[in-house]
Image (cartoon, rainbow, N blue to C red):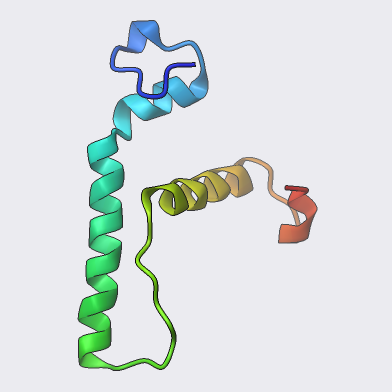
Length: 82
């Protein structure tokens, strides 16, 4: 499977097609803005919560989970079976 398919005609799976629009630059921007948001928020209202910057892999996992949960609506998260 190609990780980042650039041409719609070359896409063989739904993931390939999705990654045409969600390029590495988009993932990097989502991660950058998420981490920036937290740093701005904590400077105004300090938090005792420990924070580790979000990674691209974590952001991809979150988006995948949100998509999976919207496609197969289950009453509880434990019902996903992952």
